[in-house]
Each structure stands twice: as structure tokens, then as C-alpha cells.
Length: 110
Length: 118
Image (cartoon, rainbow over all chains, first blue to last red; front, top):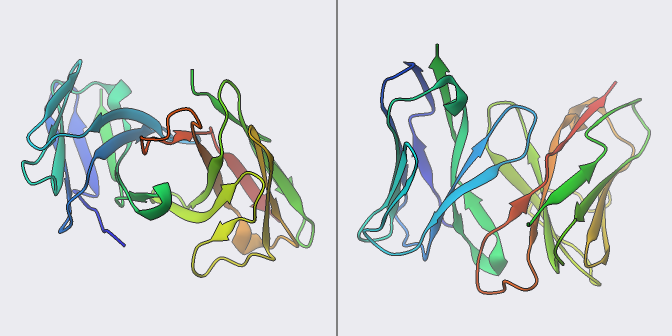
């Protein structure tokens, strides 16, 4: 089983501040996905990164895939209360399963 | 596109009863669906992989007789929690892979079902 370690586990910041969430593994992944999940709802796919060194932007969210495809980061600029949620990274495992990180709970205070 | 629904969204039942949860892919066909369980502020834990027309594959530690899975069509999978007990109370989430996008690992998630067993 390929393990994904996320850090930090919890993050509480003031509106307008920046934050970064990390997803690391000792294994190489063909791709990594980032999801956001709000309380009482299912995860929603934010982005899939495929190429080593790739950077993708989604409005105020910037996603990076490490050159060696073992790690990824999510950076949020000028966070807003609407960014509050559980952020999950996930990578493909065998038989099309997804291996999930433990998640980072982000709270943005107004 | 790629919408997955779950029904019911919430269910409260008495200990010892069975509960069925449905997972439907609304605008695509899914040969493979996955069932996850999630505890508060924790990540998703895969319970089983459901393949259309064949038996489900269960993860280690998940009782197949306790959590019955049926995937009778390309758009519907069901999870039945049999003889539910309070420790089965959790958030159950399904996901589906698009049959017509075989080269990707993307899964589309349902909104989840909150099960409370009294």
C-alpha cells in the first residue's frame, strides 16, 4: 500500500492569510489528486496533477507536483471563510483504488 | 457531468435492524463503484470495491456478511448494513469510475449517507 502523509493535520488562520498543505510519500505516483470536503458532504475533486514539476492554478489555489512525483502541495492565497473544509490528497493504488492522505482540516476565521 | 447521488442522505435506525444505502451514477455508466466509511475529522477508509455483475472485493478487516454490496447495473450499487449496531454509526460515502474514461483514476463521489444506530 502506498502511503500519503499530509501535514499539518489542522490549520486555523485569519481571513486574508495564506496557507500551504503538504502531501508526501516515499513512493512515486503516476498522478495525485486534491479534494475538498465540507461537513456532511462528499469530497469534491479540485485538481489532478500528472507531470513531475507541474503547477496548476485554480483561482486562489495553487497546486504543485514534485519533480520526483512523490509529493505535492496546495497553497491558498488570501484565504476566505469559504475555503474552510477538509482537504484530502489521494493517489492511485492497485485496481484503480485511491489511497488517501489523513486530511488537513482548514478553518478560515472571518 | 459525472454526478453521483446517494439515498438516503440520513438514516436513523434501531440496533439490530438492516439499512440499505443506494449509490447511483446519474449521467454516466460505472463498472466500478467504491464504498468508503468516514469518522469525524478523519479521512476516508475504503471498505470495498463493487464491480458490476460480479462479487464485491472487501478490504481487510471489513466483514462481507455485515456489509452486503450489490452492483446489479452500470448505474446502481447498494450497501446493506445488516444487523446494525451503534458502532456502525458513521458517514458512508460511495464513489464511481466512469466506464468511458478507463485511463484515468478519477473517482466521482456521492454526497454521503449519515447512519445513526440507536
